[in-house]
Length: 128
Image (cartoon, rainbow, N blue to C red):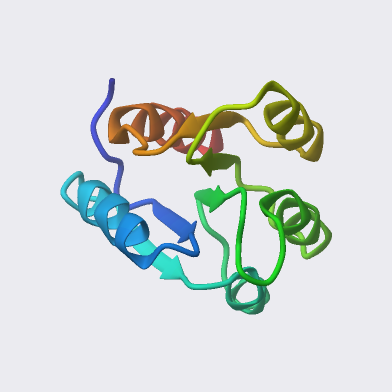
């Protein structure tokens, strides 16, 4: 796996569980990644009109919408960053719906930061 490019890539995390969002944010920040956490899909969509992330990590269940709904709304807002969907448990139907919405990876919590970093570094390298 390559190291972080400069400037730091930006990862957006939205999770209804603030403890999980903070844990993941702390893990990514330790690897020179800039992280913004959101408490809701609506907060993330508002920010999408102002800036763009390198990677989005979204829980499948948010307080205001589903993760798959969020992916569709992000795409409609012009956000093309890859999306990693997270859930407490794996379900084939759930993953199929998430992949149909356009995610690149489905991860069961707790999410392993190494898998996110691999996706992130690959994405950033493709943008160069």
